[in-house]
Image 1 (cartoon, one colour):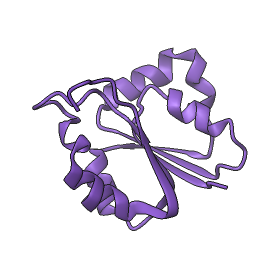
Image 2 (spheres, rainbow, N blue to C red):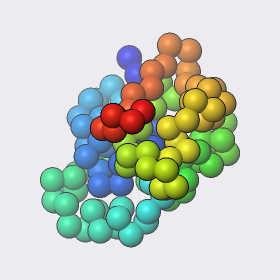
Image 3 (spheres, helix red, strand yellow):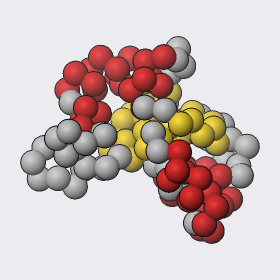
Length: 123
């Protein structure tokens, strides 16, 4: 059973909300680069209010790559809940083969999984 999860992005809290429905989850780290979005959603998105007040949720304001590379912790699940990979955009480099192999994969526990959303047909 997965115990700890790292969410790249997800500042609105919906992914955290769904993960925290599972009582087997001990810890969810939600790392979003945009503090204003996170604070707005904490205050105004009633549907996610419970998730933001769950003691198992740790909210980190940072670049996901920097956060993963700067910590020793490894995760059972890493979720990419990011904006589309528009060239020059804030998430573009989080959709590269180098990022997946060099930054993300080493942070997965043995048997861990990575899941991401992809809406762009250009990938």
